[in-house]
Length: 443
Image (cartoon, rainbow, N blue to C red):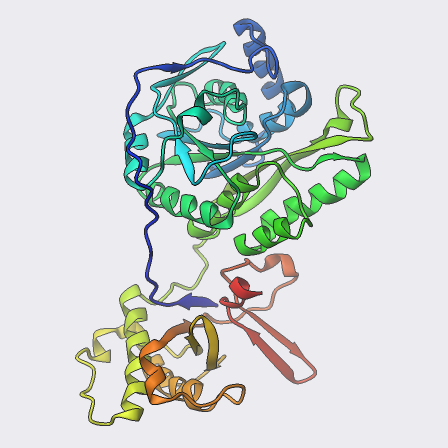
């Protein structure tokens, strides 16, 4: 089931110019979180990664989620994530961390030229930094020069598994849903133009007893893998799940959705009670995940974007013409859109001020879309028993969505449903309920 609608995108702009600095960010936590000796660090990475096998040897991840604690605790979990990308080329790696102690508004991109680790320099892609600046990212200088470790701890893994690949370091200043969504929108624009890897830095629950931490972390990972970004944010807000990097995780979820609902794979999980004789009364959780492109070869193609726009215009024109029959016909002709001859189920949804005020459609039909849409548009406007009929003065303020349904198919388990993308039909004892993809955003 696919959703088609015309949406207005609002750009997120923060006026704060980036001033390029020809400088190197020195390591702040080497010797504390990971070895400060180059040979010892290289040997640790070599030994840890050589023991692992990539889960997906043929496909490159688009997104990684990896922990940033000391290597003694989370290093093997992070290594599992980076094993998935070892020697698989990327143009650049975006590393999205957050500030543990210095909150600020928005997200900040570093304007230095290099980061330094005991293994040498890591180049920053200054061209991509400039593009991010033009898209509205700020440069919060104090955040990048502090002893923040959420980016730094992951850099040796990038150096070892993706040698000579430049990075783009980004720090999130807060974990608001709007901040995550705005950053994901910006990153998705760049993702459409280059072969990039996006690495999101976070640990999971903090300082719970061992068994309690496992339960919280299991739910956090499950929510990230199976739910919508909005549901993930709500679960954080309700304190059902936990992670220090809430902002990066929500951004990863929004980005995975905008990149055609990337499929998540859990790679590894442990907590500090599992390693180095850790105290099991107060543990910290660590997980690594990879997000891959979905196999879309077997999916029914969507109708074209232009055809989708035409259906929305047709629905509005039909409602307006009901009130004023003298309105001229649409300037466009349905014959210009041959894909609309298909006999697919469709729904028309009406909202006023963001609130539902009508939704009618057919799951299946033997009529072409150009016949179905005018009929269900009128029914949604005037015959939905849940709402009063639409009035003339309301028409100009009505938001119209047209949902064109792909052929339904029976699934074996709820885990086959892609949150945010798929609609759901429930059938039981000759009764049937339909949930359009829009329901994911409001429920």
